Image (cartoon, rainbow, N blue to C red; front, top):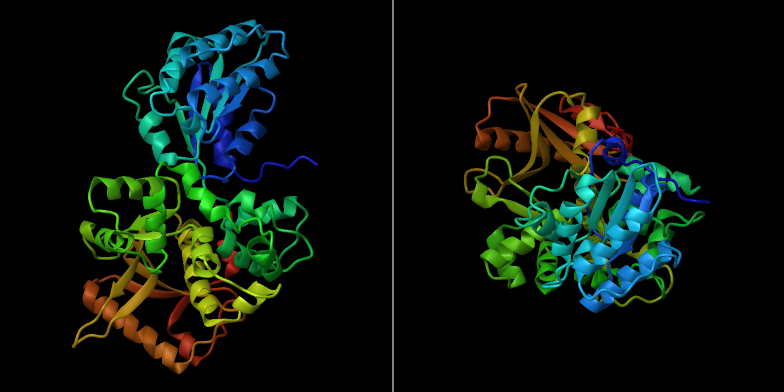
Length: 479
């Protein structure tokens, strides 16, 4: 059975509008490796695809041109005489000739997948694409889709192109991993029935990457699936980390070094801390690599509450990379039920707390909807105060600073049962609130929100402290 396209409502709308437009369109689709870019385009444009070619990884210009001609030969069913080109200008001239001869009454789509692999240094590919668009395609009833996993490259070389492709992109799509509700829908479409606690456990290890989620099998618990996908003898994700970054970035050593550095601290690192730990020199090189990792969706930058621009923190937010570095790399385990054992350890408790917090940060729109504040402008951040002799240090996982005079202080807890606030924890919250109010000097109303898996067991300690409680179901809201 052919897989259905799950979610992606906004992206599908953009692609459909391009087909219905009265003008030619050039669409840039950007997103990290394995996120489903190709599947999106092929699903929406199934009947309109006139030509499609995917770049070859680590191939030279001659090999890329041969691949291009082979695809052109295939779609023309050998009825179109093709002389092998020696340049991309010749290759695109052949494509124009083929498209002219192709009888059609509807808008055609030409799809260039993994563009950065084709447009190698000094290959002339972008000049050829510019010639194809400016001399012919722009005057036709056509949609040109260009796609790439190296997000920063796509933005710098294509979207912000200063040459013949300058301002030629008519629409952009930045494809993100699935949200929780999309993950649930994807699994159901594959006839996999899991409760939301099981889904969250798998999401925290694999993220919302469709290509990873495809490995989940029915009849296995979350623990069993993670064990099979990551720790079994021929586990599919065992070697993914070593392939992932080199496939996206030239000279990926610095990218990997920064990912490793960020995996050492849950809350994130400053630029100088990243430079020190990764050995990547501060300056242009560090800035470029950080930008590329952000655009590709592996890391996130944020400014803690009340901090200046120079204290911006960078945080590893790719679930698989964090999971791999914490539990898989250079680890030797015996036996078959490895994850079942590891999920009982203190390291797991520490990781799961962070992973759940990171998951919540990716679902801020759902949290705001559950709090009924979607229509109120707000800024989300975290708060950390190291403390001094006079004042104790404190940390707030997530705060939502609202324009209606309220700040929600969110406590995020990953538990396998309803959470109970005891006297010690209640005193800690009271202290946290007092320190935040003192240090921030805010006059806004402060409300505590507890975000936890199975909710809160009310008692005398929670009654006057927690304004609202959110559960897993709230993170699965559709927004």
